[in-house]
Amino acid sequence: MADTDAPHDDDPSRRRIVRDPLARATLLVGAPLALAMALQVLFNLVDQYLIARLPPAVADPSLDALGICDMVAALGTIVSYGVSSATATLVSQAKGRQDDRRAAEIGWGSVGLVTVFGLALGALTVAFADPIVHLALGAKGVVRSLAVSYLRVIVGGSVTVFVMFQITAVARALGQTRLPLATFVAGNVLNLFLAVLMVYGPGEAPWVFSWGPPLAAALHIPRMEVVGAAWATVIARALACAVPMALLARSLKVRAYGARFLPGRALTREIVSLAWPTSAQFVVRTSAVLLVIGLVHHAYTTSADSTAGTAYALCLRAETMALFVSMGWGSAAQTFVGMNLGASQPERAERAAWWLAGYTALTMLGLAALFFAFGRTFLGFFSGNPAVLDQAMGYLTRVAPAYTAFGVAIVLGNAVVGAGAARLALKTDLGLVAALQLPLLVAVTTLLRAPPLGLWNALVFVHLLSALVYAHLWRSPSRWRPSEPRP
Image (cartoon, rainbow, N blue to C red; front, side, top):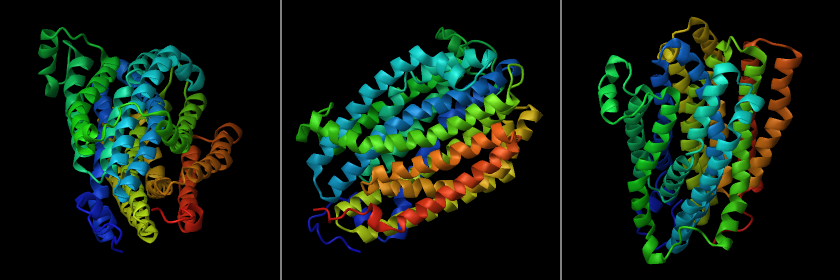
């Protein structure tokens, strides 16, 4: 359907989203965003690879600590993602109406908002790191001490990832795909360079990183091991945001429109009112993963044996890849739905989400095929422990095929949010977790005392049902479509 309400539409990014053929347009917008989100996962993969090259007595508990901390850090990131998601919805709808001043006010003000939030969350996490990893998630022994140290740095500096996500969210809401991709590429290059220096310091390092110790010695950088990986990530993200932030300010014409870095009360309330259901929705989703982490550590590990915890920590990298790639496609769905609703094209918005769900399903099938063919080789880069690898592959062979359903649910959930129905998406996720996932997984591990394989099978069932629920919801436009056409 052509856009007939904008005779002076000279924005090529907007034209692509509201006018170009959907099959091509959704692919051209969605694929770079999915790739950018995949690159975000590389921050964690780089850390995991470098830590795995340490002596086994250090590497195995450090990998378990990474798995715990990354999901706790993801919880904060997901809260920030709610602000990013709300901002993207408001900016894309403003662009759909060709209201550039409004888009600048929302986009730039939201960056200041997440900056304040990131600083506050970092301070709280530094204070309460030990109760989080020990009392809540069951970390024991050396894993506990490593996790506390790592968490204090990675979440203490979480403002950097919040700003990175916010900048890229506003850019893709404007229909830009190169800036998010370039930001994550730059961040990953910097992270690898800094992590080699800070993890190994002037000490022993694998031959491929033999350039690192002499440089670290010259710069007086000590060997920090797992904590060094956290510092490298925080610093790399901060550096990678500098130029994109300036470019975004220019794209939004911040100076011309007088947009404020910290939004006023009215705009803050508007963003928060739309953000909190989305933040809560993704907190629910991430909490479901934290539930599995807690169940695995409480039911299947001891102070002397963290094999199951380490195996699941390895698999969380695959899980995170599936999640973030799906969120990339979902971000495109949110942009297409929001902008087309803003342009009074609800049917095109609905069809765009189905196209993007289809592309996500194909991507997840490809990812599952790679895990089946090369999963053990991939995991072998991070652990040489046969017991750990056996348990990890038991997880992947059961759960990876269900990533297709997992991804479709993520995309259609983002489409619902893009329509401005964030509370509906929250209610749907909350119902799935509270009424299905929580009682099912607890029953499997505590009442039935099933081995880990029983827990993995339960997760597959949860993913399949989630996709069916969201597909049914999206096929009922009266539940999520605005009651009146947007001006």
